[in-house]
Amino acid sequence: MSGSSSTLTIVVIGANGYSGRALLRLAAHQPATYSIRAQVREPGTVLDADNIRTFTGSLEQINPELFPDEPHILVHMAGKNIDHDGTGFERVNIHGTENLLAHCNQHTLGILYHSSLSVLGQNHQRNVSNQQTPSPKTDLARSRAGAEQRVLDFAMKHNKSAYCLRPRFILGKEDAFVIPALIKLVQKGLYIGDGQQQFSVIDVDDYALLILELCHRLYTCAEPERLALNVGYQKPLSFSHMYEALQTLDPSAHIKRRITHPGALATSFNWLPVKKLRSLATQLQLIGLDHYSDVSETRKRLRSDILNRDSFDYFRELAQHFKDSSCN
Image (cartoon, rainbow, N blue to C red; front, side, top):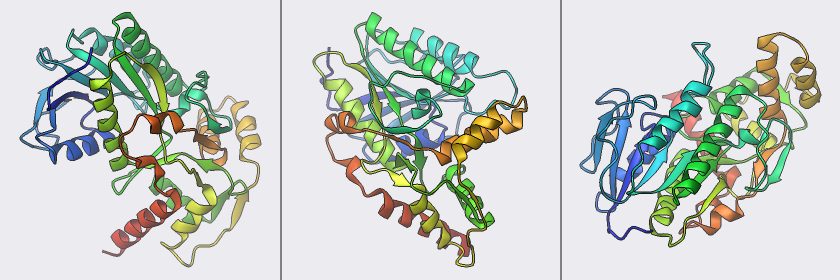
């Protein structure tokens, strides 16, 4: 079943997050096209716009008024990414997703779940297909893979469409994790691997546009479609190019140490019963090994060629932004 209204209604879970905020920013500029119903943990914490209506709730406690009695798409971007309280990820990411899906109604035409390429594991991922079988190795990745399966199973059972999106690095001017961590590496003069390892990257605003375009497809497709879709610019970005771009932030920075075999070092760390070393092993695998995917199936489903953007040019522009920001 497809929708026919000129205004696309989207229910957004996780609107407070990094990607969720970008999605709302983009939708707010097109009030005639999008009507957003966003669930937030606290009122007044997201963008205020005429076409954005907010509801207070969480994955565990969905607001009973969130889902409308009209055709809509569910965008699930909520979840637990860091285990600050030591309770693990399953309760929020898996059981929370089950609770969210239980609140869908007959007007929910499709579901779009923000997952991660990490569900495929920690080892080398070179141009991996969207049909690659999940093989998660961390608790977080296992919870994401579990949530993916719940979404796809639910969609199959209820004859709905569903996409599980698998980005690797979502970058942007407000990035508080990836870019700052890479900047610290450059400042310390620490170089990982031979620099040829490559990654799927995308700007958070391009990711938001991609999500909206896929929502349109889910809204209008005649037959249900259920699959994972890889996310990132068509040409992956190498560690050497990232390092080169970030060195412009501090011309005096130079390479002092090299970790020449990050994969082998990570393997040895994982054998040791020390939590901090295992965490470091995960980070080494993430930045020291290839993690990029084939996005051809995703591109087929987009109306614009978002993913054709040059990843190195983009990253240089982003590095320049961080350089300018540090000078102000």
